[in-house]
Length: 465
Image 1 (tube, helix red, strand yellow):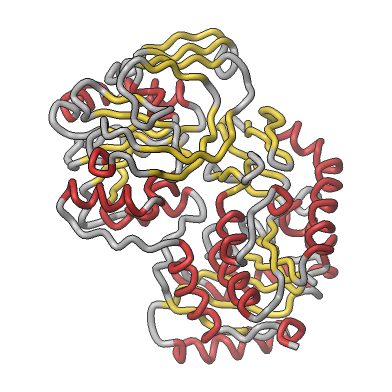
Image 2 (tube, helix red, strand yellow; image 1 turned 90 degrees about the vertical axis):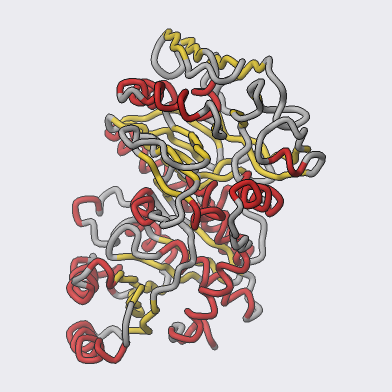
């Protein structure tokens, strides 16, 4: 059977609620798989077979105690701007598509989505489906793969989630429900109010009225819990640490910022205009490295970066690594034939020769050449690579087989995503900064939230029988 977690808006808490439900049902003895028909996200993950899916479905799979695979997110769109996205189907990159071109592909993509869902439905007791954005996007009903489309395929029991922090939660729940097509509205089995900072009794009269108007039960109210998992770019605004010793450059096309979730409590995002007044600076991944590099240079970021790097560590991850090199050469892959000078802090150059991406999981040994992680020389780290372009590095290596380090060891770059999901790396950073950082594995984070959900929510009858 299937249950679907829909939202009244983006960032209503669907991803973590779905993960919590996967965890709860798994503990109850069900075999459970997550599913999101179409995800639009720049935060992605590589499966053991080298397939790329949205990171939220990977975390949901781990919450369910299973290995993530491409069926759980058959369609992934990575927005690039100008109404263009990179399209990934069943974990494989198809190419860049304009919005109108994508809409014309939807009938064929729906067949792929249905096949992936049917396979999961056959292999698992319960498929927990996550919707996208708001479920009641009435202008998109004819092409809404992730909400109306999959609801009509799976016929799930739908729970609509509303975020009370945004205000107007009763209006958004009622409005979303009433705007649904009648056949989908009949599938709605309950409402959930999320992120309450206060006493739930204050909502009782509103809950009674909502139930009276709709005939649908409010299954529960979830208090605010800092589970620290960013669903989409809206979450970046919440990263306002009072202890922001690590600055992360907020690129226009920032990607895989979930790399830094484990050190979020000591991180702050910096715009290209900001002064670099942190102790460590990270340039993260980018969906469009050349464009983001150009934007940084237009804001005179290079001068600030070189002053900072004289005595403080600078780390580049993926696209950030490419920017820190001497040159980026595009042979017609992204922006035509372009050569662009990098920040020249690393003796490395990157060339985009073909559209094909590198997607793989990695396990690497730390060389001890790079500042901060020199404290864990000889130890292993795990992560994954997702990138276009080939980088030729002549400097010292970060790992035995990858990366580049400056002569003074203060600046280094790597293609390794999820580096800070390694406890030894987090401990090395904490020692360098002389601060305490609570390393909380994902399993511990979602367990806490799952326990809260289990206490506060009444699951649909058909799941508990």
